[in-house]
Image (cartoon, rainbow, N blue to C red; front, side, top):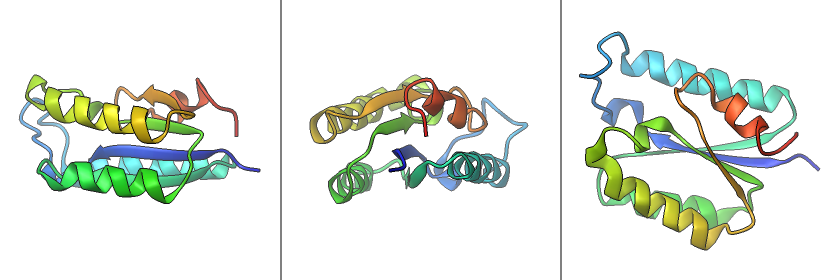
Length: 124
């Protein structure tokens, strides 16, 4: 049976790119989609959970975690930086811990290295 992965990240259209002027929402979305396709190509079942930066974020993560059981949950770098997102990151991490205690948790460093983050913890 294929390993199930949940990829949680910031909706590219909601992100602040001032620290990364070379990036655009379209570029980030393309990187995310490419990584999800790579994971699927390796045999993982992948669900994407892109969240906004408002009160709906926690609800979206809760729904994703309650709908399915996951072997691994990757939390995108956009949730950990900038430091103004620390509270949201902690909320998401605690939801994952509470609602998916069996899942490995991993972190990517960019939208382009999600596959490597997942493979550190679960084989397809």
